[in-house]
Length: 408
Image (tube, rainbow, N blue to C red; front, side, top):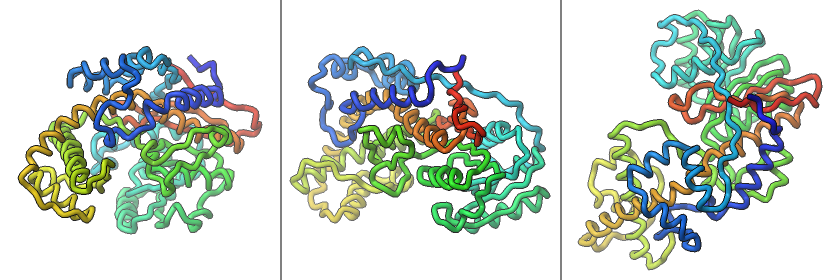
């Protein structure tokens, strides 16, 4: 059933909650050597007593996790309006058109494309890659598609595929963050973006509203991939909020994945333990009690030795690894810290969907303020991708005609 709350009311409710509970989620778990909520003994005892299996199960069920943490902090976290999952009929496309698109990605593309119907306007595909989404829409809906992509090789590959399959799709190589693509956004157009990251989908929204593009359909992703250290709020409501979000805060909204393979889980566990172990080592080397972040690493490094990892980390941070005799001790403590880290993260994860909804609503309210009628729904099942929220906005003749979020 439809929500009884407007988008503004939902935003203000979530914003108030996030501001009041900042001490529980606006932290960096890696920096802590003990549970950071010592004043809340009930919460500390609860997370300390959980087994690894219990943590894993809770972490995989956001609603249950919010309900478990709520009484321990005296705040009801279960206030997120449920979204409807629109099951539009999949458009019939031949197998050869979908060749080369991997499983979950293909499911996402098919579900997203099915929700772009009800108009014959030309399509502008933002951050298109090889244009798989645009090609499917061009073929199944007989619409002209312009696919914008920054990497020349992906444009070339996409052009070859569009010629091979004889679809009305052309590619434009360009940087969507620059002004060079502004002319592509026109009023009588349907702009789409499936999982364009951070600044990339924000650029589409800001440029499209200036061009008064008729329809905008996006599934946002990677909110933390922004150029600025602090998130630049879009809507008037967000700009009026005292809540300030850094890139590290935005990462919390992304800390949810579909079930990973055993090899991937093992690598992730090793990486976390080794990073936490090196943190203890660098504190002793530098004689400073501050966390020292490391850059991303290649997966291949995780099948090497802990000593190799520490040497790489020291090289990156300009440190000298003199005494290697205690590395096994640090490695053991790193695995112990990983257990602590998983308990701290579990509490912060109770807020990840709240933060993501705050970010989605900021985008929706921005569109409403520019005269768009907006719907928020899920375009596919959570098991296909956790980033399954779809913002569908149409320029409406009456600015007062604002839709509400759909419920189950």
